[in-house]
Length: 120
Length: 137
Image (cartoon, rainbow over all chains, first blue to last red):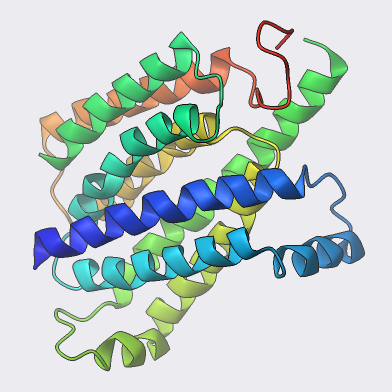
């Protein structure tokens, strides 16, 4: 049950966050933080199918996460789901075509080692 | 650092701070309000009406919105390591407010996470897409 929930969280989070990045990039930089401009941005995003799909995936991840939290320590549940971190950096390079330079790979590697230590 | 890079960087740090704080306190409130077991599918819904869980959900909605704002200009491969400082803060909250135990091994992991965040956040521009490979960054 525990590992099933973790699997659902990881898969749904990866899909949700990559879709979120794609959707927001299509939308473009949010530069105007006045309420009326934010309202216009919100209504544009509510009609963006990629953003909607990402919110649905994050919702699935949320319910699996509260299921896990009901019986697991917070300091176990949060780090263990950080395996999404590695998968998403790889997806950022190959799906989002970001230029992941050596600093980012090194940072990702160091953070991953830390996350493994925290969750063991 | 050009004025454009400086503008983008300070805006990125402000937004990343909101992303991290709403995430950490959202997760903490969820755990604080969660009962020991969710027995039936219906309990996944009724649990949302407990005050701490409702506060956690509100914070996580703000987390989602601030993260979307940040991703509208920053790379995912930049946002991931920079916001991973929340793993460290969650461990502190678990230790101090939920009386969870933190072993020396966990403290070592926390230090590594901070080092990774410093590597990425201090040394690279938040945005690479939309620029030509080999261009100024």
